Length: 138
Image 1 (spheres, rainbow, N blue to C red):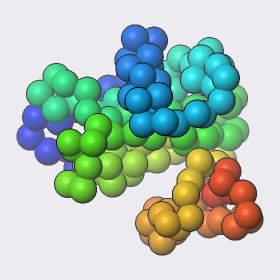
Image 2 (image 1 turned 90 degrees about the vertical axis):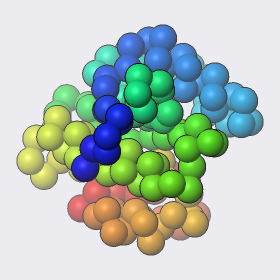
Image 3 (image 1 turned 60 degrees about the vertical axis):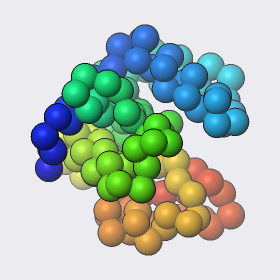
């Protein structure tokens, strides 16, 4: 699944701050202190995708006591979009989170309506089309 020059690595707090800065530059408002709360809940819950050592994307895959996981805060640098990198990173994050949880544990996800077919191919189903945080791994 990895392409030449790409690596998937856990992010430290500095890497998480970089993702926050990228999101802010795009006008995202994930919530006051959301990233720090997720990071403090699971310090192994933020990962980045690097090309030749340069961070090009990342997101959270937070583990709650091995019984529930949550995928969110997903972002790829604009110059690396529409190249399939985001889809690969999304699948690597999903698979890594599944490995970190107990068998059969649920995974919730921050999602957008336009991506529902993609999420469905990844094993998720929407549980309420009126809310944004409504996808669950089944």
